[in-house]
Image (cartoon, rainbow, N blue to C red; front, side):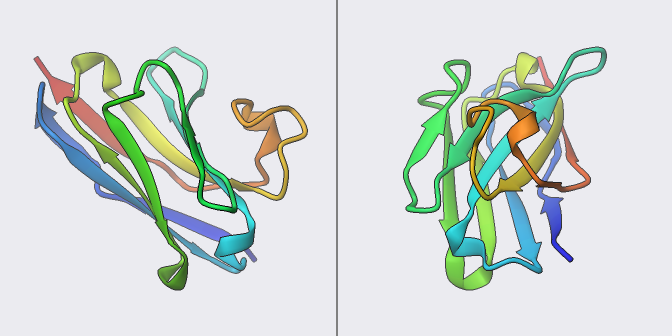
Length: 124
């Protein structure tokens, strides 16, 4: 059974940084697409970024240049380094995994498994 566990969320002031982790089990990490999404209260889940199985990354415009995804295949762990955080980055952050992206990498529908989420709060 595939399990994803996020960690690293918390409260940070605007302009600060956080690093989220997503530890995966039950799936050979390196061969799969790994994505980050976020969901603010009252809003739908939104794409943040993706790490393709080959390691290339792709980001939403709202986080490009501030967020960086990396993965350690030996540890089955993916990271989201978030810099220059803004209050509008406040959300629950989720990692997810997919074998392919039939609905496109930005659609939550493409992803098979999800973590439980970790709260990120950015104060102004």
